[in-house]
Length: 495
Image 1 (cartoon, rainbow, N blue to C red):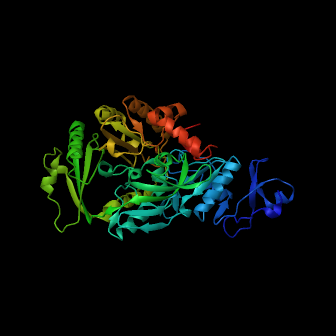
Image 2 (image 1 turned 60 degrees about the horizontal axis):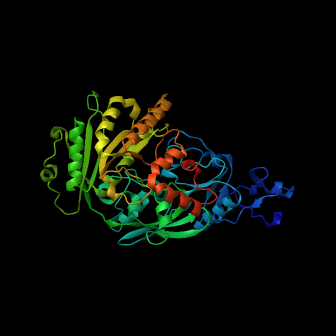
Image 3 (image 1 turned 60 degrees about the vertical axis):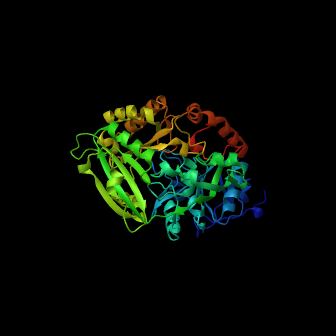
């Protein structure tokens, strides 16, 4: 290839152009000097953004939020447009390179993929910085169109400016839209609206064969179903149209405590059945005297009228330890952004940067008590550190996207072991081994896993078992839309 035809892209902005293409012979990026010396390389396409290959750039994409896996890419794409992603996917396919989107979630300069076990990693490939696509394109009375790198915090504020809100929000809002839609996106309104993927009306996707296409439930439904909660296997989400609903003004939050698991589960399911609250979550915290575990039911009544909801009516028939109940009234925005203060606490205590062996499962309701009894018996405060264990019910029928695989019961429970080990913890491997053991126990009880989290040793055979009857359609979508198998290798579904 003639060196004069090569596109000399800048690396790290003002530095001199260094990389001009990929050398298949050396399996490395080639400089202009090497091309002049006779090396044959595949020229980089002209980009609106930048392809960076400096040690500092690739190192910043070598780890994720879990801080358990190190996998360094060979290059980082900072896209200046959706067409940059189209071009680089085609380039990666032509040169047998892997490629994946990296959500770059977080706040301030503390940005990284919020996968926990290398799911967004591209060792020896190209990592795409989602923050290059961070426009809120439009807000209407019923929907929002946003690029994949927009965070749910950005979208929530943009929608609230017009008295609207996404119906399904994660507890932590500083996550990219494209990232959560690739895995599902679960939060405290799952009982009413399902996962975030259940609120998506259409997506624009760059497929693994380098095509930019729009998919919805009526247009390319196979692709629509493969990219929503599909772990980035059939295409890279670059834009999404998401449902909006009228935003309430306030949130009346009830924190109710239980010392007995069976009573807690019964009250959770009572509220799920009668639907008296707009939001419903729960967790397993320590008792105030640290003598063991108790259970916290957090129920939210959203409202906009001048008069707050009737507290007595909302609490009627519940069997919590009423003397311990805490009732608080927040603005809607303050409640939805409530974890910002917790993030600050974790960072101040140096928990945020520690390895985080999370475990996220969907349990069948009929087996939840048996599983939780085992968890309560073996879990120690050190297993949580500064973190927490969520456990609360939802109707599995609300989760409509096929790859968000669910237990075979009408009611499921989210089990979300969100560990933030203490600084200097030396038993991270023990926690990972515990995750594996608990996962195997849960699967034997009929559970399914959420795609985030850290479970060692997952094999393609186990993934096939996980997806069950959806596996064949998933494989077909992979073959059709990513025939060269270049997208998102860190998930490990197919290899």
